[in-house]
Image 1 (cartoon, rainbow, N blue to C red):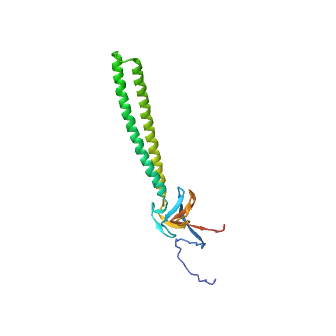
Image 2: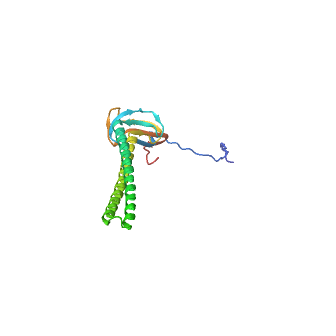
Image 3: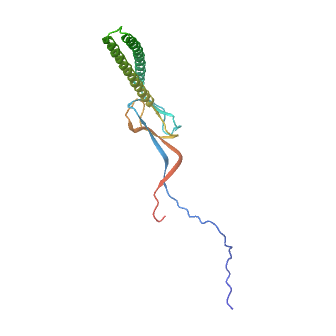
Length: 202
């Protein structure tokens, strides 16, 4: 007979086969946001350094605001002057309305010549135009004040996201313009992506 051959007996079992691949690369944040100046000016404060953690809305830097604050005060004063002008125009229109009512009553009774009634009507039209102009002047002054306050808000540079300062490009006293380059860059490092080269075979 044939010789028996000894073999190892292994029970078959279902399992996972793992294949691993070692690659090298660099980790990069998923989101990276530049904090740029919206208005030109000289940096008064830079409140962050590289590696600092910041919350969303945290102040990164401020731009000198004395001149802008003065413009806000001037704009607010112009609104007050315009409102006073509107009050005076409304009082003038109320007087003109009374005068025209009185003139019409007297004219209907025959106690006032047509020329005087025409003059009262012309005065009423002029007072209406003055009131309308005063309303427009108030609206214009309020718009100028809103704009000045927006510019004042823009002198504070805030972080739009929570993260870590990965770039700081300017120091206190530097003159910055609108837009690029950013004063600082904030990266959200809670989630990172791996940037690496992998061969086609792998």
